[in-house]
Image 1 (spheres, protein in one colour):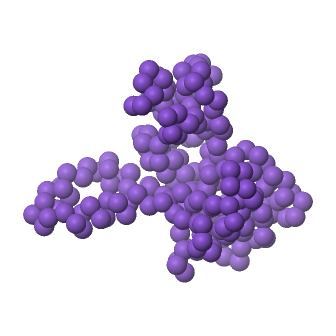
Image 2 (image 1 turned 30 degrees about the vertical axis):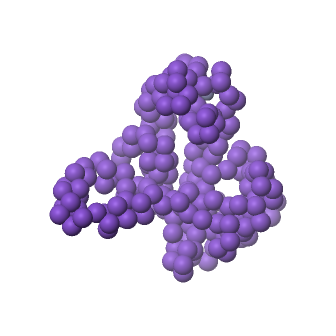
Length: 220
Ligand SMILES: [Zn+2]
């Protein structure tokens, strides 16, 4: 991966700096205040791969997800869409929802392999699947990909480069993806046995409640 224009957000760095710069006597107290739940969330946290226009990122994707969800941009912030088969989303009346997909991607960062989140539009993923069909690429075996963004506000271009020489599918990848997504959006974590459908059904009430809150006061 080239450095220019590609970065990985890591919220854990913020946490680390906080502990490193806190006064010595306070560090102990703060560490004790971290609940097991918070530690679990930190364990599932993954950086989001950002590819700016002109940059090139390379990595390996597999058959994990994608997880699809709707988002709204309200007051400069991204909010999850609460639309479901049984309930309307109050935010849909304020702005059009955009559908996003997410999967895991393995990238080489500083000569070490790292797992990141890759976010894309349905169009970008559809075109990638089409390219896999025509040029070869089986997500079950992993696909090496090159990712670019042709235009600053355009969608990603994900090109298959072939099958990786070494690739083992992420252990418990689906759950890892769900939980990384949940941490990113501040939602409850998926339990060990929960399916994608059961998890999304459970968090729907949280997303709906938030959407109602934001619709009532967009600056919340
Ligand atoms: Zn909505």
